[in-house]
Amino acid sequence: MEFCDDCGSMMKADDGLWVCGNCDYTKPKGDTDAYVVTDDQEASEVIESSDETSLPETDERCPECGNDRARWYLQQIRSADESETRFFICTECEHKWREDDH
Image 1 (cartoon, rainbow, N blue to C red):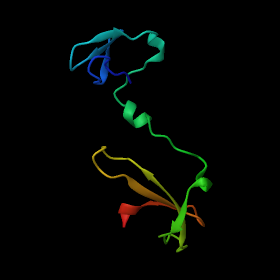
Image 2: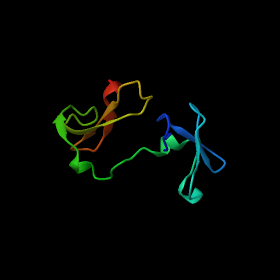
Image 3: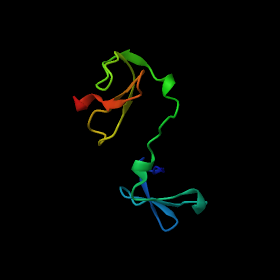
């Protein structure tokens, strides 16, 4: 992501240039191999960790096995103006569920 040196707005990539849509400032992108622009870039920016044992634990009943302990994490899955969703993972059976599924 690149920001305009003049007004601070986010710039857009256009044919080897960064172009500001607010004040029409432009500058070269530099090494074009270092930049990739895709329509679904936002979905690919989700970072997942394979180490679920390092997540915090809480008192939450598993809907599958009835265990009363679960690990949890928050993830932004909707637009930025909506709250994040809390996910739980049972410490016994590893069942995964969302807080808003209840």
